[in-house]
Amino acid sequence: MSEVTFKDRVKEYFGQQSDEFLCLMKEKPTQAFFLNEKKADRKIILSLIDFEIKESPLSDQSFYYEHENIGKTIPYELGIIYPQEIGASLTSKYIDPEDIKTVVDMCAAPGGKTINILNRLNDDVICISNDFSHARASVLSSNIERTGLDNVIVTNKRCEDLADLLQDKADLVILDAPCSGEGMIRKYPQILDTWSLNNIESLAALQSELLEHAYRMLKNGGTLIYSTCTFAFEEDEDQVSSFLERHEDMSLINIDLPSSSRLNGTVKLSFLDHTEGQFFALMRKKGSVTQSSLKPLKTIKDKTAETFIKENLLLDSYYLYKNNEHFYLSLQPLPDMKYNVMKYGICLGEVIKNRFEPAHDLYRANSLKGKYRYTYDLNDREYLDFISGKEIKKDLEDHYYQLTYRGISIGFGKCAKGTIKNKYPKGLRRMI
Image 1 (cartoon, rainbow, N blue to C red):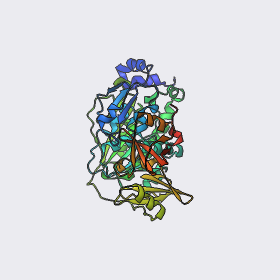
Image 2: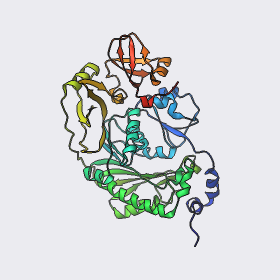
Image 3: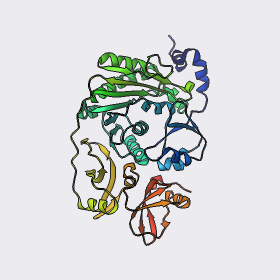
Image 4: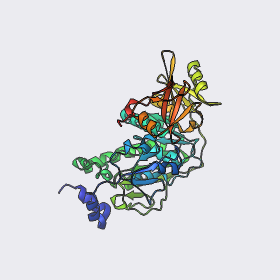
C-alpha cells in the first residue's frame, strides 16, 4: 500500500477545487494586518499608512498590504496595526462582547488572537494570555506592550496548570491549537518536508488534551473558540465533533460563512478564499452565566513607586503590584496567577539604586491616555530621531515625558537641561 501524500489529502479536502488549490499553493502568500482601534481612531490609523493596502471583504478590521518589511513602518512601530492573516482575524468577529469579563488565551504567542479579540471587547475585560514556551511568551509580552493593551496578564504555564487555577472561571477561552500547519505552506514550504499522517494523529491527540483543559476553565454559559491553521480533518472537524460528543453540555454556535468545512457551522478557509489556511469553531457551554471570581492579587505599598506615580501621573486611584522585582500598575483589580507570571497589566518600572526607573510599557498604555502630567508630541524629524535612539534638543522643564507622534504614544524620555534623553528600548530602534 502506497504512502499517503499531501496531494492525496488535498483531493479529500477540496474535491473538484483541488487542482486550483495546488496552483494557488505555488503563489506568494497573502499579507494582511488588522487595525488596533484600542490605540487610535480608525481614520487616524489609515492616514498614517503610506503603503498600498486593500480592505478585506471578510473582515471590517483587516486589510491586505504590499510591503517588504512592515515591522519597520510607522504604523507598526506605533502599535496601531498588527500583522495577521485574514482568516485568523475572523475568529473574533462572531463573539458577543456583552457579559465577557474574563478571557483566557491558552496558546497565545505571538499575540495576534489576544490583541484582535480585545479590540472587540469592552475595556473592563481581564485577559490571561499564556504560552508554555518562555521564549514565545516573551515575544507575546512584547507585542502586548507595543499595542498598548494593558488589561492583560501574560503567563508562562502548562495548560494543565492553567486549568487547575482557572477552573470554571473564564467567560471566553481561546484555544489556537498547535497543529500541522498545512494552511501555512505558502509561507513555510518546509512544512511539507516533515508532513505525515503520523504527525497529524500525534497533534490531534495533543489538541484533544488541550480541549479538555479549555473545557475545565469555561464557565456555564461561556464561549470557546477552537482554531488551527491546518486543513486536516483529524485536527479540525473530527476534533470538534469528538469534543462535542464527549461533552453534551457543549454546543456549536453556528457561523454562517461559506467555506470548505464539512462540519456545518464551522469555518475552514484556504488559499481559495484569498487568505492563508484557517479553521475555527465557536462553542458554548450550556447553563446560566455564573459569577465566579479569582482570588485577587495582593496590592503593595511602596513610597518610592508611589512618589513617582504622584509626580508623573494624574490618577485618583490605582492598584499597585510587584512581581519579579518590577512594579505593576492597573486601573482595575487583577487576579492572583501565582507563579510563572511575566506581566501583570502595566509594567510601571523598578527601583535601581534607590531611584525609580520607569518602564517603556508605562508610556505605551492605552488606558493612561490623558493621564500623564508631562507629554510632548514629536514632529516628523524628531520622531525619526527618537526611534533611532538619538537625543532630542528641546527647551522643556526637567521631567519624564510621555512622547507621542500624531497624538499616539510611542515611548518616553527624560528631559534635563534642554535635552530629552532617549529611553526608547535599544532592541526596538532602527537605523535611519
